[in-house]
Image (tube, rainbow, N blue to C red; front, side):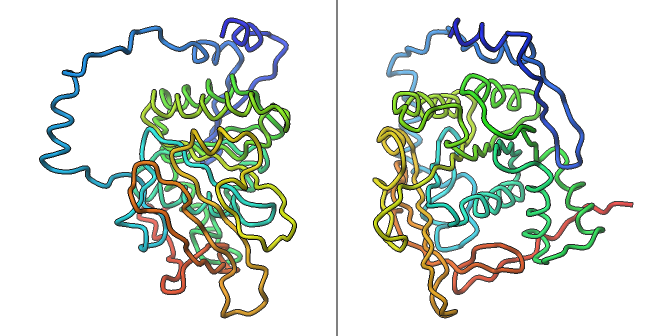
Length: 318
């Protein structure tokens, strides 16, 4: 950690910015983030008796399903995106991983979460333009709706304003900083490929997923990590948890794994994609497959029986 901190403190490094949905920016220097690269050395070893009440509550009332619901009711009683967990969303290029992640962020905000998007592939402007479309269900949302949407995101949505790549030390520092200063509890990292880790550096990838899992538990947040799937012999080959490109520890350490695959069928009766919940560590029997259709106007994925719903904005902009 001392070596990483020294690198981060180098005055030659560029400044970063975290911006909200309305474009207000907070500029961060390397020195601003330095304190957030250091983990508290407070002892975490506790006796079993400290947890007696928690275990009694579990047996007396059961474990309540909590966390962010996904857009489809089929999973409401099976699975949630819970705090203190890491979810991996994987798929081949062009499967719509970022689109789906954007849907999940919109849903998380509607359910009261404060979200941070760390997308090294898309600018905040491009992400917001897509969110306007997904929220309004319109190819070209009205300006009034878009301004109303951006106003609605106040205190709910933040962007890490950097494209290209980011090193792990900076990423974890930004997540800690935004949790403390912005109250963020749902973080999207899009994607593992844009981390400053070589594609064949499996140890570095292991360190990345372990660091994200640790910071999720430390801060009580949910981290959604997008990864790419390996290319199979045929683009139509169905994905499984072993299809995730990179170190095997990515699948091992993640709490939840979703696999998004395209069907590439021209028939409108055939689903455009499938979503496989391949791993749900804390939800017994939640593993399942969901057929999805893509609404091309809004760029939302939906099931056969549930059409996308327009986001109604309570706030109005003068």
